[in-house]
Structure formats: C-alpha cells, structure tokens
Image (cartoon, rainbow, N blue to C red):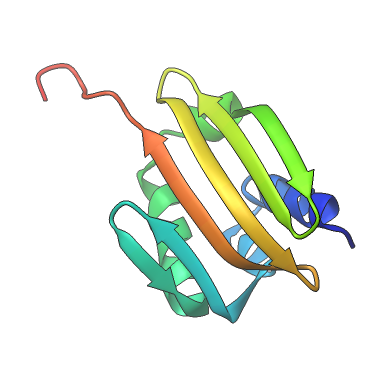
Length: 114
C-alpha cells in the first residue's frame, strides 16, 4: 500500500470499528493531541473508542475531507463534520502501511449554555 491508500483505509475504518481503525497502528505509534501524547495500541484504541462513543451518531455521516495532501510518507488533511466540528486537522507519518505518528486537533464550538 501507499501513504494515500493507508490514509484512505484509515478514513474508511472510522465508519467500521475501533478494531479496523487500530489495524493501521502499531504498539510504537504515537497520537499527538492538544490534551497530550497518546502512545501504543491500548492508548490510541481507548482514544478512538471514547471519541466514537461520545460523538453524536450523525458526526461520522457529516465528516467531509476539505483538503488532502500526500508527500512521501506524510499525509495531511483538514476536515469538518458540521455542525459538530467546523474545522479539524490531522497529519500522519505513515511507514510500511502503518501510522507511526499522527497529530490531531479539532475546533468544537461551545454548546448553548456551556
């Protein structure tokens, strides 16, 4: 597979299952977020399980990649899932068909009254 095909699999896996998502990672993978660094299969798996469990069902249906760029082993996307997430970005370092490093940040507007 290529960087682009691994990224495509990751995006599709978001709609399948946490196990399918995790097939793109290794125990050495790192996910960098504003809340801190998450390492390994257990930590990253928990992140995605929590993300999916705490997201409205319509969020994944609303997800749209706005921009995608791939250069060698690096992929970059900006995306939205309006109205839940008006802007998010991920950067990936992909090597041997696995996500080695991923950065993630999303803007989520405050809810009414919160």
